[in-house]
Length: 410
Image 1 (cartoon, rainbow, N blue to C red):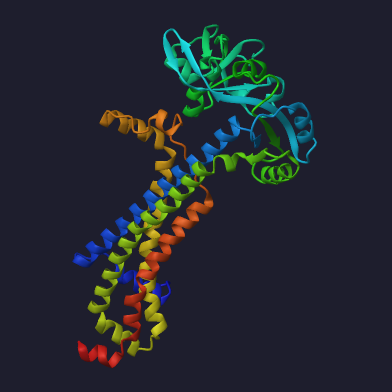
Image 2 (image 1 turned 180 degrees about the vertical axis):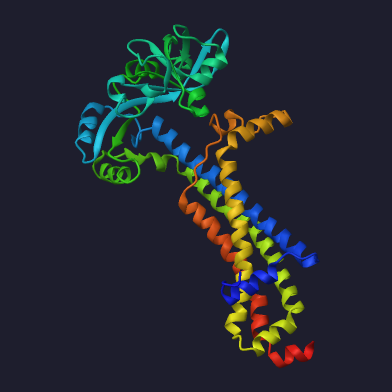
């Protein structure tokens, strides 16, 4: 300790634990900093994980750019034109709409999507999500999600009856019959919304169900990069598409959902940072008490030649040291919690007897986490800055003390 700079040596000496109320306040403040950093890391990691996983799932089941805006009659020519656009890797027509399915006297109302299997492999990751069966949609066949299969007790080879809005229309004496589709595959995308509410069939079957003839509802487009290039491609397509049609990126189509997560992440950061602010007030009250108790010592030190800047630094370093210890312990606990968050969730669910992270609500089988170096620096730096600034007011008071007044006061 004797080799330490004077300011740091004196600051650590004043922070040395004593059996006083001031030491208790310091300990409470330190615990507050630890808890604040700990909770912040866990919350930000979970929110970032949700954002990352959601983007992956959305891009896994959706095209980078989607062209819609009414029935598209000449889709073959339009697909060819879109495919020749720079940065476009693949384009495929689709038909999509709500249907009613019946199996074994059970009814559900998912969305049905008609695709061209030959082109769809370049559009999304559907083929990689199939856990049972295979991607076979030739004829009247269908792929269904794992959650829907479990809910209705559907197995490979079973036939499901599909009703479209057309089946409930009556045009004179003409009656449209539902279609029976054979289940040839079960997919698991990891998102409950898709695994329960979406089934796939061939483009021809979907066109027949909706009575579209050769028309389609839209065209899906894959680009070189879904983040940086998709927006450029969408703008380029909007300049050349026929009137009534519009190209949107996957992010634009899901901007409310993605925006909500980003807003929640930002709001949670500012709310939880107040835990550290409260702890900083504890540090400030401790240092104010120390400056009052050490008034005579400060006067003696200044009389011996210590500059106001050195005295100021003594008390700023006290807040810095408390903050540094709190940040380091908080980061360690936060990192461990993030690493073992799913075993912890499983344990707590068993203890309380309630599933704390239900799959059907949050769309994910496990709690996703993702922690970047930038998030760690932001959290740690903010906590350290707040704790250091907490010592500014008492430090200014101590630095302004006149040696004569300080000694006379004592």
